[in-house]
Image (cartoon, rainbow, N blue to C red; front, top):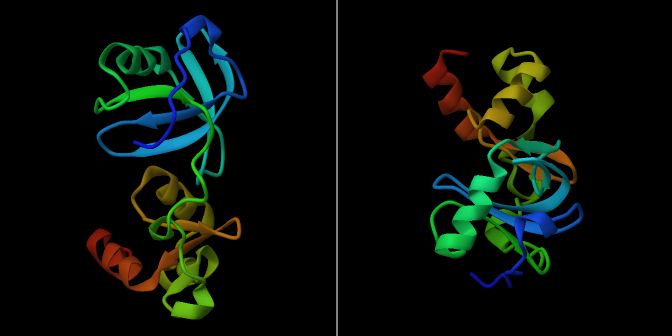
Length: 151
């Protein structure tokens, strides 16, 4: 990891600190909005709303005990990474012709946009943000829709 980890005690972790939160499923970067007891509210990059982590202190302890290279941890870092590498930045929909908006996807599979966004948040539908809007690869959407019987 190229992130510079800051060694802070749990009691010194405060809002506006930058963090890296890792689990076996993901590594996310963000900013602490609040901390209360064992939990923490984070504003994570690429998420449309704050996320509460009820077991934040456990993740933080894992980072302190086993280091920032352990599989599950939450550590305070000096700064958020430079603009994410190109594989994390989706191409513009106009350039590929394959990425579609949430509204277009909902018309395609006849689903309510609110339900569709719920599936995105839960990870059922893989989507990325482009200019603060969710975009979905059309071919991936077709295969997911067929798998779940939405079409």
